[in-house]
Structure formats: C-alpha cells, structure tokens
Amino acid sequence: MKPAQQLKQQLQHSIGQAVFGADGMIHGLCLALINGGHVLLEGVPGVGKTLLAKTLAAQLGGDFKRIQCTADLMPSDMTGVHVYNEQTHGFELVRGPLFANVVLVDEINRTGPKTQSALLQAMEEGMISIDRETYPLHDNFLVIASQNPYEFEGTYPLPESQLDRFLLRMIITYPDAQNETRVLQTYDRPGGGHAGRTGPAAEVTVTAELLDRTREQVATVHVAAPLYQYVVAIAAASRSHPKVSLGLSTRGALGLMRCARVHAALHGAEFVTPEDVKAVATAVIAHRLILTPEATLENIGVDAIVDAIFSQVDVPREQLSPESAG
Image 1 (cartoon, rainbow, N blue to C red):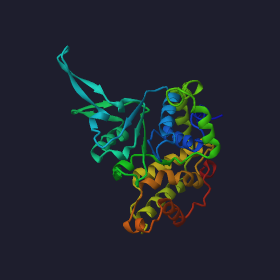
Image 2: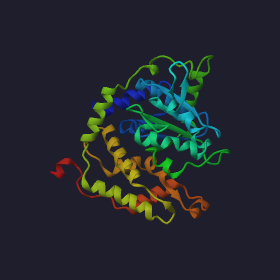
Image 3: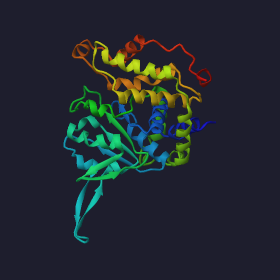
Image 4: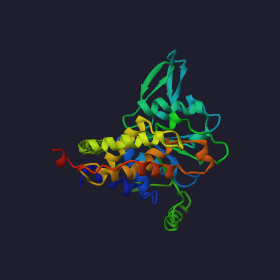
C-alpha cells in the first residue's frame, strides 16, 4: 500500500472510532494535512466539530488548543502577549493557543474582523509577529475553524482575505439515523464525550515519517500541461461569470491543483485527471466566490455557480498519463 493510502486508512480507522460517519470529513482533512492547508467547517452547533479536530490532533501526536470566539475576543488572546517577570527583570512571552499543532477556532464568525485578522499571518506564513518580534509555529501547524451558518444571530461575515486562506471548506450536516444511534450508544454514559474518550483513538497513528513519505509520493504524481491549462480556464471562468463579483484567486487555483494532485494520490493514481479536479472543486472553490447582490436576492446557491462554471470549460481530451507525455 502506498503511503498516501496508508495515511488515509489509518486516519479513517482511528478517527472513525470517535467520530461516526465522517469518512468525507476525514478525506478532506487528509487533503489539508498533506498539503499543509487549513480547513473551514460550517455547520450547526453540536455535530462533532470539536471532537473531530481534537481526535485528529491526537493522531498527529501534537498539542491541541481550542479558541472559543466571542465578540470581545482580542488578537492577543490568540497570539499571546509579553508579560513582565519581576524575577528576571524582563518581559517574557506567554504563548497563545496558536502555538499548538492543531488549533480549533470555534465559531470564528462570532468574533470581529480585527481579531479574525490575527490569523492571517499564522495561516499563510506559519509564523506570528508579536511586539515587532516574529515567532515560528509548528511545522505541521493546522487551523480547523468552524463557523455557524450566516443566518445565525451575532455572526460577522469572514473577510475575503480570510476565506481565501482556507484551503477548503466542508459542510457538516446532521448524521444519519444509524450513526446518530452509534453516538448515543457510545457517549451516553457518565464521563462520555471528550473527557471520557480513551483507547485506540488516542494513539498516534500519523508519524512525521509517514507524512513525509506521503508528501514525497504526492510530489511524483504526474500533472500534464493540459491539466494546468484546465485549472487556469476554470479560474478565468469564475472571474467572468455574471453572477460572481469576486472569482477564484491565484491562491485558490493553486489550492485546486494541489488538492486534485493529493486526491489522485489517495486513490493510488499515478497522474491527475479532470475527474480529480472536479472531485475537490466545490470544497476548494465555493467559499472563495463572492456572489453578486442579484444572485443573492435570487437565492442562487454557490454550489450551482460552481457547477455552471465547470460546464463552461472544455474538458481536456489529450492523453494525460506520463507515458503520453513521453
């Protein structure tokens, strides 16, 4: 079994013992983890977002921190602050939760834009600037942010620059009856839930060595020139769509290409196809598109816009395998 498939299988087995019916979420987390990107989870409260992030952190063997966003949350509450130490007669940094390996920013759209912007440098550059000093974060720093649906009271829309820094967005819905029954049977006892979860799900299953081998495998997946042109055409179509006021950025196009490459590797493929691009398109593109006021009034969903964009772009007909390139 190739490293990418081994990584996904191990995460599905270990996380699946704590979070039920989350195979699609785990696939998305694999895309983000291998690419070193960040994930935006959207869904109503109480469907397992915190447990999913905490369990993933356990698989990586890293620290997990949770930031509960509120209207009065300050940027320093995320990054940390220098505090004067009377014994050493100097200032020492009290590190904030962003210095963990996996950080869950819970209900990110309940805090204001000023505090949301504290995440920008951390997510893009893997470092934090505090009082004109720069501090590096963990090599595999991962932000999993959750947000409530926009119609909920007390929410602030995420700025476009913030949305663009999330590699992908996943929608968490209510579990089906079978998996919801498993949740009740597993966690209804006293001490159940986050505090009471022990056993295999707490073991480290994704080592740094496995992650490195997976990334080496992904780097060898072949991408033919027509595929790059295909993704560029998709980005161009999003920018010219009459119902879209802000289309896909170059960062977004790069994210689409990178996720398609990892998606191919997770299925054991040697090269990327248009189907790989389409498979990850909605998760990578939808949250980056800003619709026109007319489209919003007409209640046109962004997923429908993504489908329309793909219908406008010609699918490459050339042979895309490495052999055809040679």
